[in-house]
Image 1 (cartoon, helix red, strand yellow):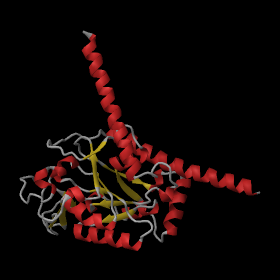
Image 2: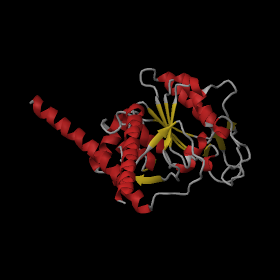
Image 3: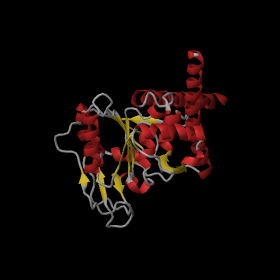
Image 4: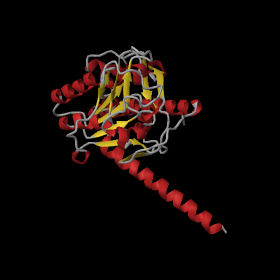
Length: 302
């Protein structure tokens, strides 16, 4: 009677190991330097897109200090133009991977907005439209860090969004909706779209710069100064971005599949706090490692 249970456990372990390996491979391709880079190089080759209402004032400066390209707007056409301009201006260090920190609108469209009022600036885009417009400029990976992002790949809305999905979160598109053209062939796209393996509510966490160690703040301030920017007092970051940076074992990613069901699963406040503390600890460790390396180099030169 025990054999079926043992077989089930073995199969579950094998599937879990396979999912972990798949996630590790995807991250190694899309964001290879993340866990190992100096603090000012963490985001090398990676862009982050924020919807303004899930961000804080000057949030992009925090990410730019770490080497990310960062974009924040309620207008998708403006974001796409800025990404294009960035890659043309940085031919030797273009954005290869984009992390999309926006609303998923319950899986009805990638939404950026300034607020929840019907007349607030707001726009939507389909996943296929992102692929079509970003492929020619060298982007190769799009990572969707949005609520129920797997539902955005459903065939009925992958190319063209439903203008009336009957969802209260699908507010008026005051800045328009961007769809793929009829000529777009996803089979010819060079872009890989990555989503979480399961549907859930994505949580954005807000932290303060003062929560970092003084040496870490100094390292970030020096990196920001080199780029001609000033650090904000606060920053916002998604749990998924943190998990990718930390190579967290609980993170599971996949490609090439969509999800039908709508999920309300969300991280508990206690788990969110643990994850945020791990993020802070990781940044502190990177800064301390750089200090040790610099000290060792100085000692060796004497």
